Image (cartoon, rainbow, N blue to C red; front, side, top):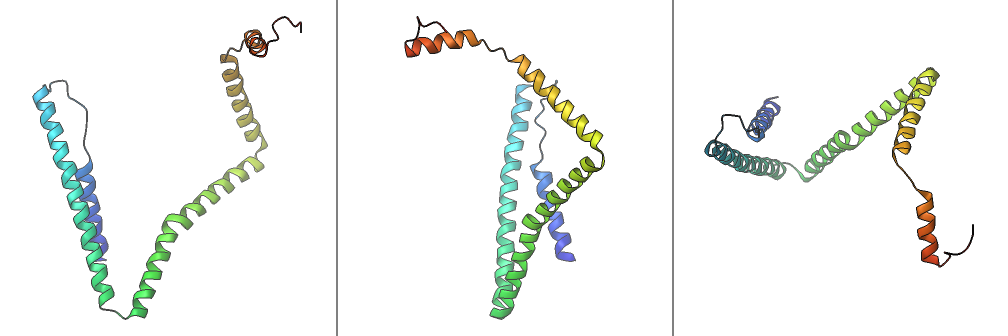
Length: 155
């Protein structure tokens, strides 16, 4: 629809305004870098002005719509919009997470060698991590004995 196309253009325009490359080119002097930073700040402010104006326009259009429909129709529209948001931001991501977890579980169940390979790789990582940490138990015991007054006690 036309409204969806217009909103896509607005989002693309906001993304174009927001994007900025922070890399200082080799030939840049401090003046050129300062000018680029100033341009970035102007673009940031423009982004926020356009975004806030867009949100205000959206709220205005929704309020005009709700003012011109019956209370029952407005409630139906509000519940439909709320369910749509719930579906997009809660139900959909949870369904994707469940399906990915199910696919991983089925892959591990159908191919046990894959599970063993993953476990052995993980165990070798843990062994390397544990081996890289040097623990001197004798120093810890002596320190603990001093704290508790057990210096002369034979263990």
